[in-house]
Amino acid sequence: MAQSQNTELLGLSLQELTDLVETLGRAPYRARQLFDGLYRQRWSSLEQFTTLSLGLRQELRESGVTVGLPRIEKRFASVDGTVRYLFGFTDGQSVETVWMPEGDGGEAGDGSASGDEELADKKDWHRATICISSQVGCAVDCAFCMTALLGLKRNLTAGEIVGQVLAVLEDQQVDVERSRLNLVFMGQGEPFLNYDNFMQAVRLLVEGVGIPQSRMTVSTSGILPRIADFGVEPIRPKLAVSLNAPSEKLRTQIMPVTKKWTIEKLISALREFPLRDREKLTFEYVLLGGLNDDVQHARQVVDLLRGLRAKVNLIALNPGPEIPFSMPSEKRVLAFQNILTRAGLPAFIRRPRGRDIYAACGQLKRTMELVQLTRE
Image (cartoon, rainbow, N blue to C red; front, top):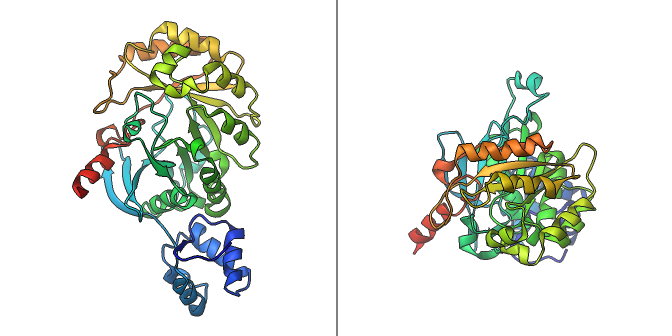
């Protein structure tokens, strides 16, 4: 890697760190010390890298090298324990990240805690989910999502994606090795439209931070070329697809991305997706009152997904300003779930987390608006 001014270490692989230290005339083992300090130890400044000599630390500073950890600008705490973080970057842009203790709000009745009872008795037991952003804003323009109202500002770097996780873990004082931690790439942005940086972040989170890929899930609106690329990755999270409608016309109405990649092409690509042992595809379905929540829609979902190893997460709309839809009734949500489960398609109702602080699914925009107004 060519040396340049204002180099941020966070986001660099072990090989890239090796290239960096070798340009300074240092032994390659120094790169491993940097890698461990960045990702395993979560050190945020060069002064903390005491495994390096004072001379090397000084040389790194003089070369314009910094750690590059994003700063926490604001925190909002929900009554249910969820915390919404606003992260600021050096160019003035911001994203939001959500911490959900004791699971991710759950899939009602999915038994996901099965097998954890023995661990749960341990004093150091900790279980949580972090919802991570991959872009500043989003270009996909789903009609039910507040983030879409921001438009796309820019992609996040691999370091900015990893940095969200590291900063939250440090703020919450999480010991990764003693915790059951889940990561979901379901915050602001479409990860598959920032594919290379997203995948670099995944590899660093696995190889550096020590979070198993089996504990990660990425959600996509259905970017077909990247679904194919994703399927052959040696290290990859589980795949979730934002479906939200069973017909071409209705899905196009609420998800314009369908104009480019149709439902037929999407399902065809997913039938070819190489699932691992015991792995299932997850389909996310946001229920919009009176629009896509009828039992007839549920029957169409059953027909559409027939033959796939899949489950469905049902998400009642999380309301917000400028969102032109209403929440479905509990009766319609339960009726929709009943149709799916009776047909043999596992379906779970996602309990909202952090709705009171605009931290629930589809709500990540509010804090950014407030901060922008304050800056103006």
